[in-house]
Length: 276
Image 1: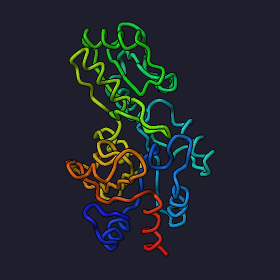
Image 2: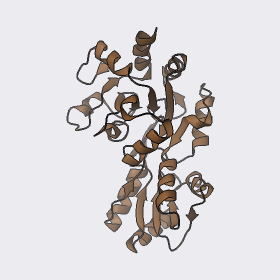
Image 3: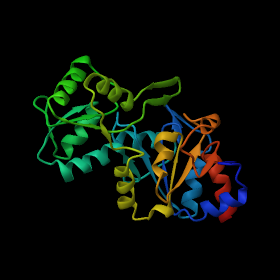
Image 4: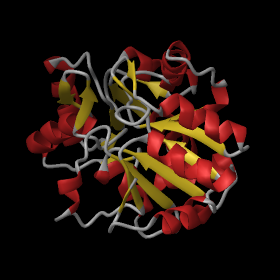
Protein backbone atom coordinates (compact mmCIF):
# COMPACT_ATOMS: atom_id res chain seq x y z
CA UNK A 1 0.00 0.00 0.00
CA UNK A 2 1.13 3.51 -0.85
CA UNK A 3 -0.57 6.41 0.85
CA UNK A 4 -1.41 9.70 -0.85
CA UNK A 5 1.28 11.41 1.23
CA UNK A 6 2.83 8.19 2.56
CA UNK A 7 -0.18 7.74 4.85
CA UNK A 8 0.28 5.26 7.64
CA UNK A 9 -1.47 1.90 7.50
CA UNK A 10 -3.51 3.02 10.50
CA UNK A 11 -4.93 5.96 8.57
CA UNK A 12 -5.84 3.66 5.66
CA UNK A 13 -7.63 1.36 8.08
CA UNK A 14 -9.51 4.31 9.58
CA UNK A 15 -10.67 5.42 6.13
CA UNK A 16 -11.57 2.02 4.68
CA UNK A 17 -13.49 0.78 7.71
CA UNK A 18 -16.03 3.59 7.10
CA UNK A 19 -16.65 2.60 3.47
CA UNK A 20 -19.95 0.78 2.96
CA UNK A 21 -19.90 0.56 -0.84
CA UNK A 22 -17.08 0.37 -3.39
CA UNK A 23 -17.64 1.60 -6.96
CA UNK A 24 -15.05 -0.15 -9.10
CA UNK A 25 -13.70 0.89 -12.46
CA UNK A 26 -12.97 -1.95 -14.93
CA UNK A 27 -10.31 -1.14 -17.56
CA UNK A 28 -6.96 -0.87 -15.81
CA UNK A 29 -8.48 -1.61 -12.41
CA UNK A 30 -10.17 -5.03 -12.40
CA UNK A 31 -8.75 -6.18 -15.74
CA UNK A 32 -6.59 -5.00 -18.62
CA UNK A 33 -7.87 -6.03 -22.04
CA UNK A 34 -8.83 -9.70 -21.71
CA UNK A 35 -6.56 -10.31 -18.73
CA UNK A 36 -7.78 -10.19 -15.13
CA UNK A 37 -5.36 -8.20 -12.98
CA UNK A 38 -3.67 -10.04 -10.15
CA UNK A 39 -5.53 -9.70 -6.86
CA UNK A 40 -8.84 -8.55 -8.38
CA UNK A 41 -10.86 -11.71 -7.74
CA UNK A 42 -9.50 -12.09 -4.20
CA UNK A 43 -10.45 -8.46 -3.50
CA UNK A 44 -14.03 -9.11 -4.67
CA UNK A 45 -14.20 -12.26 -2.57
CA UNK A 46 -12.99 -10.30 0.47
CA UNK A 47 -15.79 -7.77 0.00
CA UNK A 48 -18.35 -10.55 -0.32
CA UNK A 49 -17.04 -12.37 2.73
CA UNK A 50 -17.50 -9.27 4.87
CA UNK A 51 -20.87 -8.25 3.37
CA UNK A 52 -19.45 -5.01 1.94
CA UNK A 53 -21.50 -3.75 -1.00
CA UNK A 54 -19.85 -3.05 -4.34
CA UNK A 55 -20.72 -2.32 -7.94
CA UNK A 56 -18.77 -1.93 -11.13
CA UNK A 57 -18.91 1.30 -13.10
CA UNK A 58 -17.20 1.73 -16.44
CA UNK A 59 -16.93 4.86 -18.55
CA UNK A 60 -16.28 2.66 -21.59
CA UNK A 61 -19.26 3.34 -23.84
CA UNK A 62 -18.08 1.17 -26.74
CA UNK A 63 -20.04 -1.81 -25.39
CA UNK A 64 -23.09 -2.31 -23.17
CA UNK A 65 -23.48 -3.65 -19.64
CA UNK A 66 -24.22 -7.21 -20.78
CA UNK A 67 -20.85 -7.45 -22.59
CA UNK A 68 -18.95 -6.38 -19.46
CA UNK A 69 -20.96 -8.72 -17.25
CA UNK A 70 -20.10 -11.67 -19.50
CA UNK A 71 -16.44 -10.62 -19.65
CA UNK A 72 -16.09 -10.60 -15.87
CA UNK A 73 -17.90 -13.93 -15.58
CA UNK A 74 -15.47 -15.49 -18.07
CA UNK A 75 -12.59 -14.12 -16.00
CA UNK A 76 -13.78 -15.97 -12.93
CA UNK A 77 -16.31 -13.87 -11.01
CA UNK A 78 -20.05 -14.57 -11.29
CA UNK A 79 -21.62 -11.14 -10.76
CA UNK A 80 -25.35 -10.42 -10.97
CA UNK A 81 -26.75 -8.10 -13.64
CA UNK A 82 -27.58 -5.30 -11.18
CA UNK A 83 -23.93 -5.00 -10.15
CA UNK A 84 -22.87 -3.43 -13.47
CA UNK A 85 -23.28 0.31 -14.06
CA UNK A 86 -22.09 2.10 -17.19
CA UNK A 87 -21.84 5.66 -18.50
CA UNK A 88 -24.45 4.77 -21.15
CA UNK A 89 -27.06 4.56 -18.38
CA UNK A 90 -26.17 7.98 -16.98
CA UNK A 91 -26.62 9.90 -20.23
CA UNK A 92 -29.72 7.91 -21.19
CA UNK A 93 -31.27 8.68 -17.81
CA UNK A 94 -30.55 12.40 -18.30
CA UNK A 95 -32.03 12.50 -21.81
CA UNK A 96 -35.16 10.63 -20.71
CA UNK A 97 -35.69 13.09 -17.86
CA UNK A 98 -34.81 16.29 -19.74
CA UNK A 99 -34.98 15.72 -23.53
CA UNK A 100 -37.55 12.97 -24.02
CA UNK A 101 -39.09 14.61 -27.10
CA UNK A 102 -35.76 15.40 -28.83
CA UNK A 103 -34.31 13.71 -31.91
CA UNK A 104 -30.91 12.21 -31.05
CA UNK A 105 -28.02 11.39 -33.37
CA UNK A 106 -25.71 8.81 -31.76
CA UNK A 107 -22.09 8.75 -32.90
CA UNK A 108 -21.18 5.43 -31.35
CA UNK A 109 -21.10 1.68 -31.73
CA UNK A 110 -24.19 -0.42 -32.34
CA UNK A 111 -24.12 -1.39 -28.65
CA UNK A 112 -24.60 2.25 -27.65
CA UNK A 113 -27.29 2.84 -30.26
CA UNK A 114 -29.14 -0.27 -29.10
CA UNK A 115 -29.07 0.96 -25.49
CA UNK A 116 -30.65 4.24 -26.62
CA UNK A 117 -33.30 2.50 -28.70
CA UNK A 118 -34.12 0.10 -25.84
CA UNK A 119 -34.77 3.18 -23.67
CA UNK A 120 -37.28 4.44 -26.30
CA UNK A 121 -35.15 7.47 -27.19
CA UNK A 122 -35.82 8.81 -30.69
CA UNK A 123 -32.54 7.92 -32.46
CA UNK A 124 -32.25 9.57 -35.89
CA UNK A 125 -29.72 9.90 -38.70
CA UNK A 126 -30.88 13.32 -39.96
CA UNK A 127 -32.17 16.62 -38.57
CA UNK A 128 -31.00 15.93 -35.01
CA UNK A 129 -31.70 18.13 -31.98
CA UNK A 130 -29.02 16.41 -29.91
CA UNK A 131 -25.68 14.83 -30.86
CA UNK A 132 -24.41 12.13 -28.48
CA UNK A 133 -20.81 11.00 -28.93
CA UNK A 134 -19.53 7.81 -27.36
CA UNK A 135 -16.36 5.70 -27.57
CA UNK A 136 -16.95 4.77 -31.22
CA UNK A 137 -14.58 1.98 -32.26
CA UNK A 138 -16.45 1.88 -35.60
CA UNK A 139 -15.85 5.59 -36.28
CA UNK A 140 -16.45 6.78 -39.84
CA UNK A 141 -15.61 10.15 -41.39
CA UNK A 142 -19.14 10.42 -42.77
CA UNK A 143 -20.70 10.20 -39.31
CA UNK A 144 -18.19 12.63 -37.80
CA UNK A 145 -19.08 15.10 -40.56
CA UNK A 146 -22.78 14.62 -39.85
CA UNK A 147 -22.27 15.23 -36.15
CA UNK A 148 -20.36 18.45 -36.89
CA UNK A 149 -23.08 19.62 -39.27
CA UNK A 150 -25.85 19.05 -36.72
CA UNK A 151 -23.86 20.84 -34.00
CA UNK A 152 -23.16 23.83 -36.27
CA UNK A 153 -26.90 23.98 -36.92
CA UNK A 154 -27.62 24.25 -33.18
CA UNK A 155 -27.86 20.67 -31.95
CA UNK A 156 -26.87 20.12 -28.32
CA UNK A 157 -23.47 18.38 -28.05
CA UNK A 158 -23.22 15.66 -25.36
CA UNK A 159 -20.31 13.31 -24.67
CA UNK A 160 -20.92 9.97 -22.97
CA UNK A 161 -17.50 9.86 -21.27
CA UNK A 162 -14.51 12.25 -21.20
CA UNK A 163 -11.69 9.66 -21.35
CA UNK A 164 -9.06 10.56 -23.94
CA UNK A 165 -7.54 7.07 -24.03
CA UNK A 166 -8.64 3.52 -23.29
CA UNK A 167 -5.97 1.21 -21.83
CA UNK A 168 -5.39 -2.14 -23.54
CA UNK A 169 -2.85 -4.91 -23.18
CA UNK A 170 -0.92 -3.35 -26.08
CA UNK A 171 -1.06 0.29 -24.92
CA UNK A 172 -3.61 3.07 -25.29
CA UNK A 173 -6.22 3.70 -28.00
CA UNK A 174 -8.26 6.92 -28.58
CA UNK A 175 -11.44 7.07 -26.48
CA UNK A 176 -14.57 9.24 -26.47
CA UNK A 177 -12.81 12.37 -25.18
CA UNK A 178 -10.41 12.29 -28.12
CA UNK A 179 -13.26 11.94 -30.61
CA UNK A 180 -15.11 14.83 -28.96
CA UNK A 181 -11.92 16.94 -29.08
CA UNK A 182 -11.81 16.45 -32.85
CA UNK A 183 -15.42 17.60 -33.18
CA UNK A 184 -14.74 20.58 -30.91
CA UNK A 185 -11.75 21.52 -33.08
CA UNK A 186 -14.02 21.59 -36.10
CA UNK A 187 -17.12 23.25 -34.59
CA UNK A 188 -15.76 25.30 -31.70
CA UNK A 189 -18.40 23.72 -29.44
CA UNK A 190 -17.40 21.95 -26.21
CA UNK A 191 -19.61 19.02 -25.11
CA UNK A 192 -21.15 18.34 -21.74
CA UNK A 193 -19.91 14.98 -20.43
CA UNK A 194 -21.86 12.41 -18.41
CA UNK A 195 -19.52 9.64 -17.27
CA UNK A 196 -17.04 9.95 -14.42
CA UNK A 197 -16.21 12.50 -13.03
CA UNK A 198 -19.43 14.38 -13.81
CA UNK A 199 -21.97 15.27 -11.14
CA UNK A 200 -24.44 13.33 -13.28
CA UNK A 201 -22.57 10.10 -12.50
CA UNK A 202 -22.20 10.91 -8.81
CA UNK A 203 -25.95 11.55 -8.50
CA UNK A 204 -26.74 8.40 -10.49
CA UNK A 205 -24.54 6.25 -8.23
CA UNK A 206 -25.96 7.74 -5.02
CA UNK A 207 -29.50 7.09 -6.20
CA UNK A 208 -28.72 3.57 -7.42
CA UNK A 209 -26.88 2.44 -4.27
CA UNK A 210 -28.82 4.35 -1.64
CA UNK A 211 -25.62 5.32 0.18
CA UNK A 212 -24.44 8.85 0.97
CA UNK A 213 -21.18 10.35 -0.34
CA UNK A 214 -19.00 9.59 2.69
CA UNK A 215 -20.02 5.90 2.62
CA UNK A 216 -18.86 5.37 -0.98
CA UNK A 217 -15.34 4.77 -2.32
CA UNK A 218 -14.64 5.24 -6.02
CA UNK A 219 -11.76 3.02 -7.12
CA UNK A 220 -9.91 3.41 -10.42
CA UNK A 221 -6.71 4.01 -12.36
CA UNK A 222 -7.34 7.48 -13.84
CA UNK A 223 -6.91 10.75 -12.04
CA UNK A 224 -9.15 12.87 -14.28
CA UNK A 225 -12.14 10.50 -14.17
CA UNK A 226 -12.11 7.88 -11.38
CA UNK A 227 -10.43 10.15 -8.83
CA UNK A 228 -11.75 13.54 -9.96
CA UNK A 229 -15.30 12.40 -9.18
CA UNK A 230 -14.44 12.88 -5.50
CA UNK A 231 -13.68 16.58 -5.92
CA UNK A 232 -15.91 18.90 -3.88
CA UNK A 233 -17.82 16.08 -2.19
CA UNK A 234 -17.30 13.67 0.71
CA UNK A 235 -16.71 10.43 -1.19
CA UNK A 236 -13.49 8.46 -0.77
CA UNK A 237 -11.27 7.99 -3.84
CA UNK A 238 -8.74 5.19 -4.24
CA UNK A 239 -6.16 5.27 -7.02
CA UNK A 240 -4.71 1.96 -8.20
CA UNK A 241 -1.46 2.04 -10.18
CA UNK A 242 -2.40 -0.94 -12.37
CA UNK A 243 -3.62 1.10 -15.34
CA UNK A 244 -3.11 4.61 -16.71
CA UNK A 245 -1.93 6.79 -13.81
CA UNK A 246 1.60 6.59 -12.48
CA UNK A 247 2.90 7.79 -9.13
CA UNK A 248 4.84 10.64 -10.74
CA UNK A 249 1.60 11.99 -12.25
CA UNK A 250 0.52 13.06 -8.76
CA UNK A 251 3.40 15.50 -8.31
CA UNK A 252 1.83 18.33 -10.33
CA UNK A 253 -1.79 17.16 -10.36
CA UNK A 254 -4.52 19.22 -8.72
CA UNK A 255 -6.50 16.01 -8.41
CA UNK A 256 -5.35 13.91 -5.45
CA UNK A 257 -6.80 10.58 -4.27
CA UNK A 258 -7.65 9.77 -0.69
CA UNK A 259 -5.51 6.61 -0.88
CA UNK A 260 -3.17 4.96 -3.37
CA UNK A 261 -2.52 1.24 -3.88
CA UNK A 262 -0.51 -0.70 -6.42
CA UNK A 263 -3.58 -2.80 -7.20
CA UNK A 264 -6.87 -4.07 -5.78
CA UNK A 265 -4.87 -6.75 -4.04
CA UNK A 266 -3.39 -4.08 -1.78
CA UNK A 267 -6.84 -2.86 -0.79
CA UNK A 268 -7.77 -6.45 0.00
CA UNK A 269 -4.80 -6.75 2.34
CA UNK A 270 -5.95 -3.76 4.42
CA UNK A 271 -9.55 -5.01 4.50
CA UNK A 272 -8.28 -8.33 5.84
CA UNK A 273 -6.65 -6.48 8.74
CA UNK A 274 -9.90 -4.68 9.47
CA UNK A 275 -12.30 -7.61 9.34
CA UNK A 276 -10.21 -10.69 10.20
